[in-house]
Length: 146
Image 1: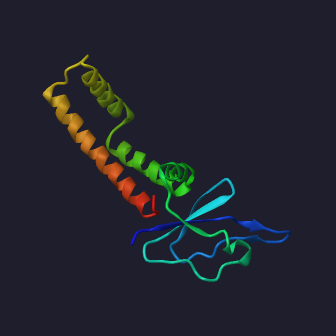
Image 2: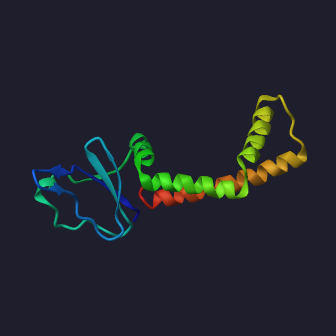
């Protein structure tokens, strides 16, 4: 059982803003327009007691690719994951290093440059490292159902 995403519409009257009651470990992913999206961790469920003002707006969501990308872009949790991915890469490789590999890769892809065996080995090590960081990021976002 994976993380589940729910949506709901907050309601505000003259004195109160009504929000969804969440179990421990649940997070608010983002609000897009007037709809707020939350993520429940694997194995948890929404409390049955919810404010009447929002109860009818609560829905389980299976995000399509477009909604998934919008949530990832708007979610501060996903933004933090993205920054941590950059930080992990920068701890091992500078931006100049990355640009060096990009120039070699573009040159090789367009047939304008033939990398040396040493350059190919360095690019392979770099690529495997970056793909490991990207896999870590995908795993972290998967914990939110993204």
